[in-house]
Amino acid sequence: MEIIQDKLLEEDLLEVLLTAIEEEKAAQARYQGALELAKSPESQALFQDLVEVEREHERLLHERYDQIKKKLEVKIIGKWNRWMKAEAG
Image 1 (tube, one colour):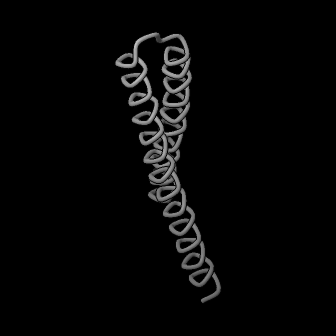
Image 2: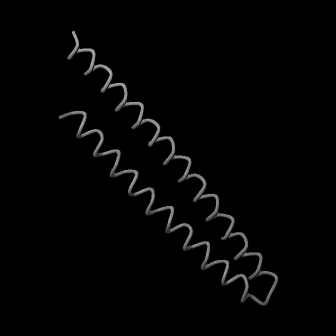
């Protein structure tokens, strides 16, 4: 049961991270649109900064997603191997 519960919690976290990544992409698109409409250099600089901040957020979320996914795969494989050895022994 522990294996299943751990897997479910991490899968839920992966789902949340995927949603957050999509939200970061949507924010980038909004700020990019505002950047294209901005008239003053100050407004353009502000929206360009916001686009870059959202890109960095997306990068960090992708990085964390990949870390958790890798950890989940290693954990499942490790527990599977221990289970197979126990069944064989």
